[in-house]
Amino acid sequence: MSIRPRFAHRPVPAAPDPSTESAEMPWLLRAEGAGKSFGRTRALDDADLTVRAGEAVAIMGPSGSGKSTLLHVLAGIIAPDEGRVLLRGAGSTGGEDSEGAADLASLGDDERSSLRLRRFGFVFQQGLLLPELTASENVELPMLLLGYARSEARSRSAEVLGRLGLKGLGDRRIGRLSGGQAQRVAIARALIAEPSLVFADEPTGALDSSTADEVLEALLAAGRGADRALVIVTHDARVASRCDRTVRLRDGRIEASR
Image (cartoon, rainbow, N blue to C red):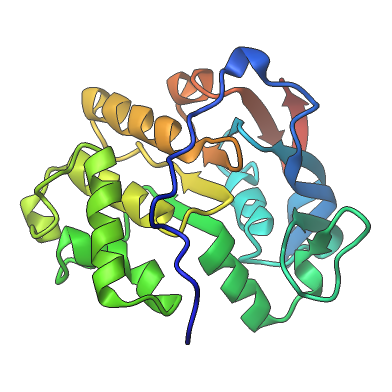
């Protein structure tokens, strides 16, 4: 598989000033009337949500309110039963509308998997890192799956780890890192392919407050940019307060967005 390298000499985009955030920013992802049921349980009901470039969006709500279901629908991990989720700039899928956006549910499994690898980055509460690999090897995986040479993947991994305060720790296995360091490795893995959207599901939930603050700072600084956005599911009001906008769910319905 031959892919032109995208990473060499590309400057890291600066995070936008939240005070300048406006509806004029281009949208990247849009859910329109998205609904999802599991048996008789209505997990998501008529959800409308637009995610714009440069913003961090927090998704909050009580347990069982549909937060993770909304995240999985937005990321194309599961398809909605009703409505649609549009991704702008999805590529040559043949299903783009006049704005160059494609409905994720209309794509085949292979196309959705490819988009998740190329366009989306994921950070989970437990990191889901491979303990038998080093920090650098964990971060390199998305680039290797995209067909890049190991040497380029290793170089890019070192660059991203360095930006996240982990310079010189790439050769350590995950078990030799602190919880905060391991979660920053997970963030580096999510960012290495320069995704348009980073999805984080309770990324600080397993950390103490001090470490959580450090990890959140790293995620916000790296996950938002002029051409990308960050979507975070969280129970923590402190995390939500650091985002540009908070979406609140209850019983599968979006109650408020500010």
